[in-house]
Length: 164
Image (tube, rainbow, N blue to C red; front, side, top):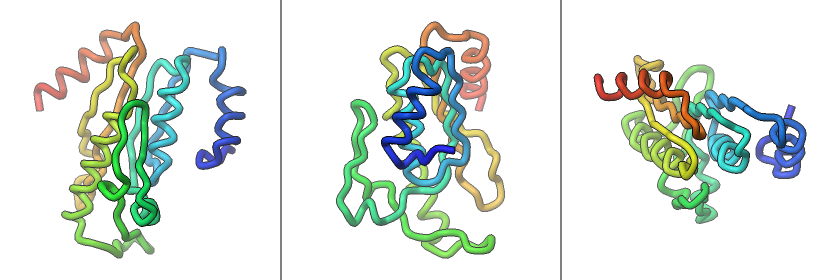
């Protein structure tokens, strides 16, 4: 178990699991708040990670916006206030701004995460897969693969994107 918000624990994990151990597939599903940032950083910093799949979840909390933080992923940076939102789920019920408002923030969050994925030596794609249909909007998947590509995987993904 590793606390991904603790940089020392992440460094130790990278030394144990990533360095000279490849190829690695990194699947990060349902990561809440800033954990999605950590997943992108792991992909960007570790060339042994050949394939990456991120499905972000909750938006970062307002504490980051109140501190006027700037999130930086690779060459991409953006103000936290563009993506932070108050509100949370309690016992299956949403307490916060209207879901139509949070949807716009989530789309912007997914766009920023996508732009932060280092694509100098990788192919990447942002794909909407409708896994939440009734009231949910967290349907963005970010995929990246370091070169050389596994062409059949990308051919199928690209056909599905173009066909939608």
